[in-house]
Length: 310
Image (cartoon, rainbow, N blue to C red):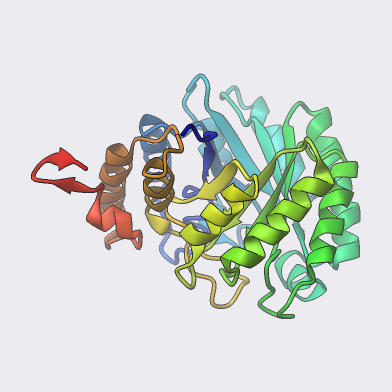
């Protein structure tokens, strides 16, 4: 039986590192990006254009963009939380470097988290993201938006599904070329994820839907599979399961790239990522970080018995 392939968006250079207390050197981030390309990643979120006082790990965003490899066929993404961030992402393309391909905007689904994360209510976020998407698109960037805390909020708890569906429709009307749903704190369960993903896909039609999962409670791989069955074909993940949000209490790392590659690969779904290369990259980067990375498949590897892949 043939299954539709998926695309994995690697977020380890940005979301995987933004919560780290010790600064990861620019050269090491660029080396990580090159490793991700070597293992097959074709979309990589490389930096976030945010206030470095709030997220010190992203203080070198422009230097990262300036150091990106040519990498034909690979698309690089810069995260933007406001119009100033979009302006910086656009300006970074004028450094003579290869530049970015996409601007990733963020709309938080609740006032409580939105005010803490971005200093704006949901209503303010709709206005701001509408302007951001328009500006990014006009500058030639693929303009996409993530609806954060779509499955639960660290400050308000339950998020009504209809609100998320309505926000997705508003962003589609505003010109988003891709919409992502983020389980920012890892509270979603498969039935919830499948239902909401299916409902949003039905609402936004031909606009691609992406899913961003955190593995706080160990359900991210199961949630990814539920989303796949509901029609989602694009997933964020981070090498080694790194990550967390500085403004979301209790948020653990992203779903590990190795987890998704193993899950989908053994289910007959192509990912374009080489699992052995991903595990090797995990072990290499664990030395940079000075600790073992959280990904379980990164520790166990593929299913191999006596040197034979099962």
